Length: 102
Length: 102
DNA sequence: CGTGTAAGGAATTCTGACACG
DNA sequence: CGTGTAAGGAATTCTGACACG
Figure 1 (cartoon, rainbow over the protein chains, first blue to last red):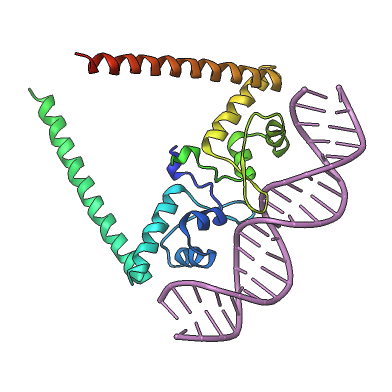
Figure 2: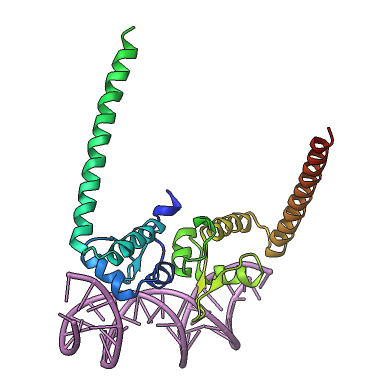
């Protein structure tokens, strides 16, 4: 759908754009911080969103954060987002019913 | 700047997304219809915009158009665009001067 | 823990050419 | 003209391991 989310970029280009080494990029995958797709042959494919993600990670690593901490922060962030979306849905439901009972 | 214009995609992925063969994609480059960048090693890098362009080309080829005709149409289209932009600039100039002489 | 590196192999891409039509 | 293909080589990527700290 969106260009930003399409996994089409090889690791070499990712390294150029992020300034990270291949070793680092693969390690962050091992630590479950990024999730590239694979070609049939097995080469990794990243999206622009993954690249942004990796630059965030690089920044946090530079600040002395450890991979597991970054992952923990992510889980927390996602949980918060889910919560907000849930509340949004509930409000939407109430809104619909209200308008349907004039 | 823009994701759509960044040349980061290898020919293999381009072929998957467009349905074209490598031979076709390279040939359209030879005929000056697309202009990929190159890595230091010499591998071609395409943008999403290039991919859209290639899909347009594929459509025109399927309609029986020849490469030189496609290129000619492009020249014409660009010339028209340049003309419009020029007119736009002229209008902008007049607009500015008009507001500066009350 | 996070990263560099040498090792060997596999996947990917490149060019120039011959073929068909 | 537009495309397929086999050929040989080069660039790119992959994994698992050892090293350092």
